[in-house]
Amino acid sequence: MTDTIHRAASDGYAAAVDEYERSRPGYPLEAVAWLAHTLRIHSGCTVLELGAGTGKLTSQLVPLRARVVAVEPVTEMRGRLIAAVPSAVPLAAAAEALPLGDGTIDAALAAQAFHWFDHDAALAELGRVLRPRGRLGLAWNVRDPMVDWSRRITEIIDRLAGDTPRHGSAVWRAAFERCGWFVPIGEASFPNPMSVTPEQVVDRVASISFVAAAEPGAREEVLDEVRSLLASHPDLAGRARITFPYRTDVHAWERTD
Image 1: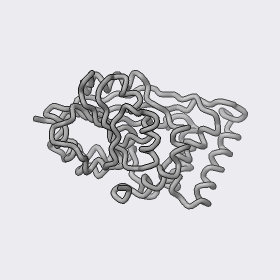
Image 2: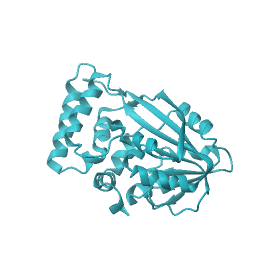
Image 3: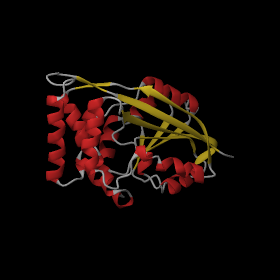
Image 4: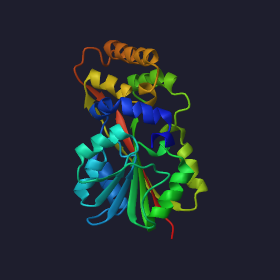
C-alpha cells in the first residue's frame, strides 16, 4: 500500500506516529460545525474521510452520528485510528483507488491530506463514489506566518522539504480547475491556537513527514535548532507553555450531476 504514496508520507508518518499524536492539534468546533453544515452531514448519512491519520478529525465526526468510513494507507497511523475511534470503519486504501461502489458516499473530507494525493486521480475517484450533488470538504491547520518565531520555525524546517508536496503551494487548487466533477461552494478560516509545552513544539516539528523521513543527522540538527530558538527567543524563553498560533482553513465543493 505505501508504495502508492510519497515516500516522505509513508516513511515519515510511520516513524513519527507518536509525535504526531502528541503534538498535532485537532480542529476547532466552529470549523467542524461549518463543515457539517456545508457538506450536509447528518445522522444516517455515509461520510468518507481520506487520509484520516490517527483519527484527529475522525473523532470529531463521529458525534455527528453519521457512518464514517476512514481511509488511511499508513499501517502505523491506521492502527492509532482504530484504537482511538473504534466506531469508524477503517480502510487500508489510497485516495486514488477506493474500494467503494459508485455513488455510495454522501459527503467526503480530507484534513491535512489532500496535498499528498495524485489530485486528478483522487478527484476522479471522489466523483465516482460520491452521489450526485454530494459534497467534498478539505481542511488544513496552518501555522501563522505573522508570528515571528512561528515563521522562523518554518524557515528552519523548510531546509529539509525538498520536493515534498505542500499545502501552501496551492498546486492542489489547479486540479479543481481542471476537473469537471466539482464546483466550489464556500471556504472559511477559523482561529485554532494550541497551548503546548516547548517539547510539544519539538514533537510537532519531528512529526512533519519530511523531517521524520530525513537522515538522522539532518533531522537532529533541525530539532536542535528549534530547541535553541525556543530557549532563546524573547517571547518564549523560560516559558512552561506556549500558544502555538494555528488557524484552520476549510474549503467545500459540490459534485455536479
